[in-house]
Image 1: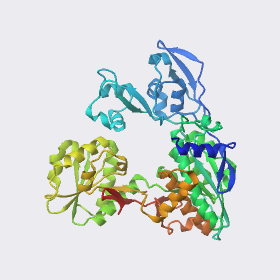
Image 2: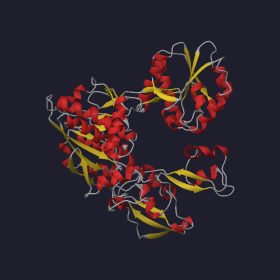
Image 3: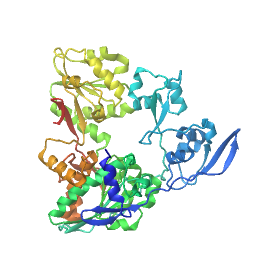
Image 4: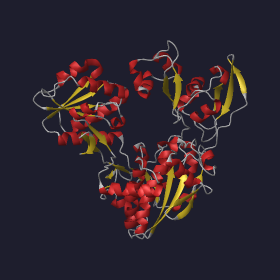
Length: 547
């Protein structure tokens, strides 16, 4: 059966890339980057023939590697200048196909991974050096190799993406404060710009077809944008029924920071009161720069560094940063678990230490000395057991997203006598995607996980949305559909009610929608707002429930 998202995308883009939104036809702008043109200029370098490729504005290293059918790692190895980033005008030496024994590089459907077939006697160390990666990166992408490599096994090799970089931003010490036009009067209509990743160029064969067939495939990276738009539309349908006009302009948006800079400079965007997107953190700074000192609010739905909020109160982040998430998680644990000893478990890996330091910092700020730190790879289960209390509740906080380690730890914890020790486990948000944890152990260890979004499928309002979605699109809503609905239902009514004065009401307007709770806090004087809402999910009756 065909994927209904493909049909939805085909419908959205069929009439000269026109999108049907809330009863009006609105043109989508196809401003994606052009395809990389392969150079014909070859030279001899130390006995090897290489191409000389001049980097054009908006090109990425991934796109260049695809054009020449070579590994990103090989391009990096041939060009020391890439250590400072990819820049327009840079001349790169690209190894020729003959250097790879005329083998075509095979990628998975997402385009993020090279598919490598393990050859006889190949070790993880050998493979990691071949692709200029750490062994840990390959293990994380392939949890199953913890049992060992076997000849003929196909494993995923992460593609290291290097995009063109923007010049560093030099802060202005004393910038004149922009005086916004005061207007807290209700609005009768609102203009919205949606900047979404549709990848129209990659889907051109699908767009140009009169009808779809079973084998037609939608470019996988387009799915979040399509789902977000579909949920946003349903929210706008509801708002329009209440008598407010909503005009939505939808734009296929580049992910590359260099291409985004010229994209967001487009003056036709300026008339909208609300910008939603981009999804990619690389383009967020360009969008933020474009709305600064204006009456436009920029909403960043997904992860972006907090520096994009600095000195720009027009920008709002829906997804909390890691420091905010860990601080709020720690505060909730301290508040909800009295007479509890906390054991912070990790393997002292670089990617874990930021989480460890943030949790310890929060406990210290609360004058709470009930936390012990365990480096598991050093002391093992015996050391962890020795840190447990028999008189108090024990909360084991596992500061790791390494699926192989987490799975192994869960299996080891089976031997602990829960009658002798009262144990609960707190994991990281990434654990929600793990499907290999023993469900009985999850229940036994009272596993809880932090999250900033969660869908309660038993909720009446949620089921009304799902019913409306099925009727409109003939398919099931994905997580991005819920995100799009929530963003529209929070920000559009806020702007309609308060007009340009909405920014002064952000912190006092707290709201829980279908999957997201909104609780914004200003990050500094004249700086933007970050959503603080982080809640804890706990497994009860073999189901994740919000606490």
